[in-house]
Length: 640
Image (cartoon, rainbow, N blue to C red):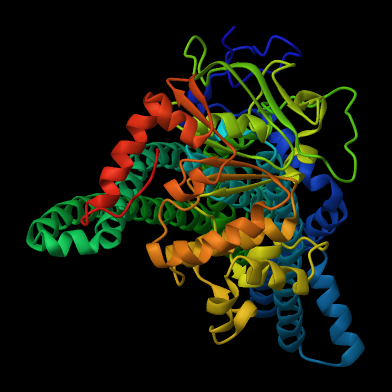
């Protein structure tokens, strides 16, 4: 029976089909999903105290901003300049407060009004700043937790998931999409501070002049409609701007990373012409964005001027007829921005909200993806030290349904023995060891470790007992010592250095200025391929696994470095069950047995010499390799 890598049922090895293509889908977020928004807000629950403090602060700051305008219009203009104290317009008690402070301190009214304005202005600044700090503090901590949860979830997804989903898509969810949530939450918090003065100002305006207020309110839908169409237009333009910037970055990255090829092929002029074309398209889109933004700003300014004209016309007449004070007219002009600004910001935040909805969908799409390696219901606890017997029993496996990679593969590796696996590319060599490492699911009763069904052992417990050295050794950020120990507290510095000495990595490490504390750049670019491979051997030896797997581990090693590591390999494999894949001839000859795979089927099995004498596929591969060794222009020397 052929099985899929996505198997998660107990014995069949089959699982429902998963549509990994959804990770490539562009989500629009055009619909406001309140359920999704509520789910996003759950990460803010642990920081609700900060949010309540922020809400109180923004209410206080907004009210103080309204009082500042009342001080200017009603206290300064009406009370101090005009001398009008009987106007029916509300002054929120500020005129009476001014009079009380005059009497208490014996100061002129102008000084008192100036002091009140300064105090209120200071409160707006301090409270507003404090509000933003507490709001952002809660948002940043909540998104930190979300990012941490998302990262932890992604770390537990199996290899089958990453075989089908581009890493770039995953990185976008952890970086850009969470950043979009930050912009949304911050914007919503700031929007609250804009609508508080909106409603306070509206209340005061209605109590002053219902007619003038209603006329001004007729302009609000116009501002809202203009903002809506502007955001609709800019959404498409900004998308094209982002696409053009992405094209610029992609072209730049491709050419800079391949600069040697560019210079060798004399492509500089052609590349410059192509880059100029892409750059011109970006410039065109940027200008479209700038022009539209300029027109929208000019429209809003014109509308504000229309509103000001309406206030002067109606307000001036009301002043003449003693229906409104001069300060009331000024107050209307000051409150007009408080009516328009929240509407404009709301339009902006709706677009941010829609984008955040799409980001939220992508984030929770990843968080809800439950694909994982099947763990045993009743796990078997392994002894402190395994003997290291490995058995593959009629293994049938395929990465895709109905596409077998391994077909009825059976082989036993006794403790401490070395098995070399060879075969043409695509024969299933690496697949076999990936199953041994429990990176994919398969039916029970196929692979055994010390006669224990591998599916009865937790995947993490299996991987602690297996050391794998790949041709593409991954370097993490940090020092050389960090890359040997992988921050395992059980591996001491002395043990790591001893492991490096055993595999002959110590000489080149000791020659570095900082020795084992020398920092490594991205992907270990400041080390040669051979040095990186030596570190890989040191890493495995320091972990001291019972089973060793070498997958193409010396394929990219030069002859001089190979001589260094051959001795180290002998020490590394001593007392360990070893599986050697596509190694060079010398290593294969030292294996106890050789397994020859072709198209997922075991074609031959036996010792090196026995298979040579047999004259089959292994003999053919051996002769091809021997011919490569004799050819001075070749240096690969591999049985693949």
